[in-house]
Length: 187
Image (cartoon, rainbow, N blue to C red; front, side, top):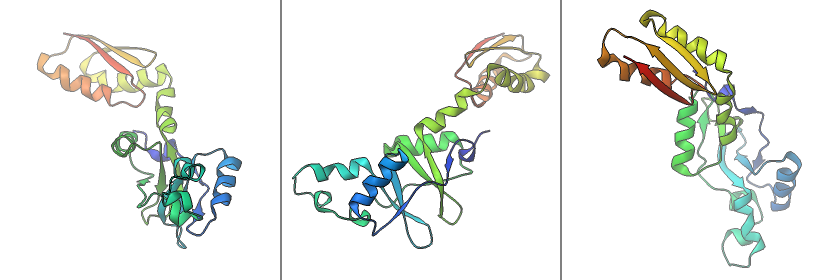
């Protein structure tokens, strides 16, 4: 099963709490990113500044962020992070629950090692049909099931010993990295 380390960007650009507003904008533009993690002296992630956190500066709305001049005043905190060994579905659930487009990736001590985006998570679907077919065929070998894969959609064909086992069999195949859908023609 793929994990975050398989799809993330290592070595993300970051800022410290005292990084000035303009320097953050310069970094976002120079690196073509929409957010940067804010790290402490030990490189632990304490927050994130995104382009959305910077936009209030364009308004004269009287919000705290409209008057902010450094990362500490701009950042969303505490930071929501993920470890590099987490599964892609776990990261997707975290992003969905918190309505995030990206997550800082940290080591076991909370130190920044990279970033993962929604787009990165989709890389699992770039697996070739043949790779998926081989993996699913390995799962099906003992059951004598034939496997076809087209555009990530797996079709299972054949007879199994116990019809009651079909739903759990299909669920196992659905969890194979890169599978878009499973069509069961098992009987």
